[in-house]
Amino acid sequence: MSARFAPGDRVRVREWFPPGHIRTPYYVRGKRGEIERICGRFNNPERLAYGRADDPKVLYRVRFAQTEVWGRAERPSDTIDIEIYEHWLEPDK
Amino acid sequence: MSDDHDHPHHPEHHLPSSYHEKLTAAVIELLAEKNVLPSEKVTAAIDIMDSRGPNLGAKVVARAWVDPEFKKRLSADGTKACAELGIDVGSLKLVVVENTPQAHNVIVCTLCSCYPKMLLGIPPAWYKSKAYRSRTAREPRKVLHEFGLHVNDGVAVRVHDSTADMRYLVLPMRPSGTEGWSEDKLAELVTRDSMIGVAQANEPIAI
Image 1 (cartoon, helix red, strand yellow):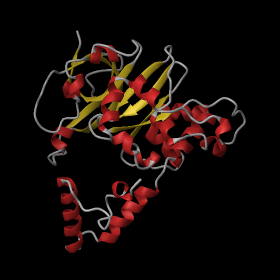
Image 2 (cartoon, one colour):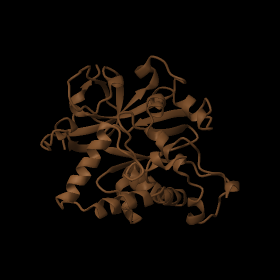
Image 3 (cartoon, helix red, strand yellow):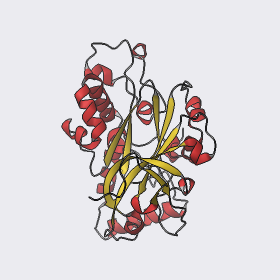
Image 4 (cartoon, helix red, strand yellow):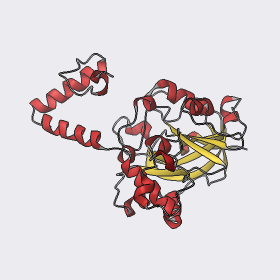
């Protein structure tokens, strides 16, 4: 399994709005976070939704600060972890 | 509470009203009529689902409380560690997140209502509600407070949005005053809500 990112890497979720069955929530698109762990390789749900189990992708858990996601947070310490497929992530330079 | 909403699968009590309920009823009828899937099998599958409760999850938590090596394996690979206890979580990948004095974890699925049914049984209705799903991502402390759980300022709240192929289980903190307790007795303190992260495990006085 060759994963593009490693735990601790800073990433940004693509600001991308394709139609179809998407497992990347709207609220994190364009947001910056850090790879928490690599979950493994799973069939891309965007194709699986149409019966095509032919496009495995690396799945990551990405940790975001609540302040980054919402522009505010109940406490600055608070985070939200979300599973995101590799093709939705780009390096955060 | 009326049975109508708790048991939408009993057609005699509930006339399908929404598009998806009608579609489900039609597909079940068709499968039975064509002898693809007899209705007894559908009923049996529903019974198995209904019979599952949070007891398996509680067993996993109690083992982690008494066995630090098991806890390490559980944090590294939840699916594999459950297999050690003879619990098959199926094809789902289990991520176990541990509560500590520094961090409190809470689980939500904002896109639908993903839930570790194999360990916790059928999810409660509130877990699937739009209010819980949208508010927990945005204002977890307020939501937890409404559940009666106050998280201190010095403790980070970690929300886990179960969006894809993982399922989550919170490992609550072991209550004090339980030193020397057996695993079975400890498991009685572990509630469903404490494994979702909207409560702590029960205090020993509760049982």
